[in-house]
Each structure stands twice: as structure tokens, then as C-alpha cells.
Length: 110
Image (cartoon, rainbow, N blue to C red):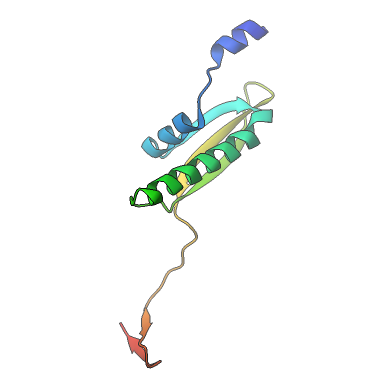
């Protein structure tokens, strides 16, 4: 495949467009050049942060999920990476019981 054919196969997407696809599709992945992977990850994180700041400023609920990335070399063509992008809950732990502390310092079982 020559350079012209290769470029016709590619399209430019903004970080906003990619993030929108991630919100709509929980199993979203893109194929991109190796040298663009880190820039793409940083751009998506920055865009998500920007959206959270905007939502907070407007009094809207903020999405507390984090972006998760998985990289796999593309087997059919060297120099490309398949980047899977998903939204996942922040680190969580299983809790059996919650105790609330009253102002007197006593523990009450809930």
C-alpha cells in the first residue's frame, strides 16, 4: 500500500469525537500509529477533565469514571496499535458494614 492509499484509509478525529464514542460504546477501540498512542491517551484524559470542570461549573453532575486503555500491536500491519478505550469505576473495595461516627465520638452500627 503506498502513502496515498494509506492516508485515504485514515481519518482525523478530535478528542471530543473519540470521547463521545467511548461514552456511547463501552467496547470502543481505534487503530492508530504507534507514535500517536501517548498523545491520544493524554488528549482524551485532558478532554475528560475539561468536561468535568465545565459540568461542575454549570452545577451538573460530574462523571467519576476513569478512562482505561489497553494497547495491542496490530498484527496485520507494523507500526500500528489497536487502542481499546473504556470508562471504568475508580478503585473500589467491598464493604460489609458501614459505621457512622456521631459528634460525641461514639460509633453507631448502620
